[in-house]
Image (cartoon, rainbow, N blue to C red):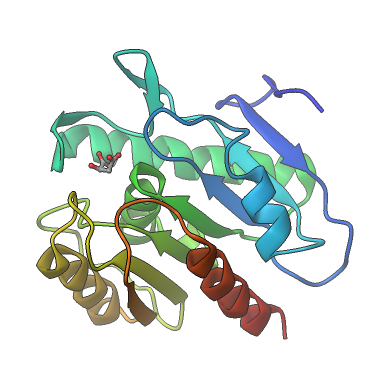
Amino acid sequence: MTTATTLSFLHRFEPATAAGPPPLLLLHGTGGDEDDLLPLGRMIAPGSALLSPRGKVLEHGMPRFFRRLAEGVFDEADVVKQANALADFVAEARDAYGLAAPVAVGFSNGANIAAAVLLLRPEALAGAVLIRAMVPLAKPPVADLSGKPVLILSGAADPIIPAENAGRLARQLTEAGAVVGHETLPTGHGLTQADAALAKRFLDGLAA
Ligand code: MLT
């Protein structure tokens, strides 16, 4: 399989091999690309269609989904612009590939853009798994996320994301009506097997 250049983001697409489970929108972290999270997607949602775009913003050559001014300090105008562009891409891909609304699975910068899409364009996503996410917009618009399932997975020893910040994101999403689970693992910023296991349990619950 090769990277597709047909839609507005470079991406990879793997069609579903089973009927039923929702497609996943896989969103990589800083310096990653469209290949990174495919193995995780296959592991946590066997049979699901996988849609995996590459972030369009380059930071010293490293792909990201929006600009930042410093670690943890975001260019919020760019967050809004890129979240809308990503939501538009999801709509294009749903048309092109005949997909239901996907559940986003984002890691780090990918989790942050997924949170921004939830808050700005809630119709784009059926839910989300946000791994090491933080608040993408200090004052988000009033979104209607009624009933949308969201799992936030934080690291107790994450040097980038203060616990208070991840907690604030959980509150913002809950206040918007999402059904939010927030678990803090005894780990740092990196992705772990425990994240994969918890994400799988959450997605299995959606498919049931
Ligand atoms: C971000 O920039 O989205 C966060 O600081 C996480 C990261 O990508 O390192």
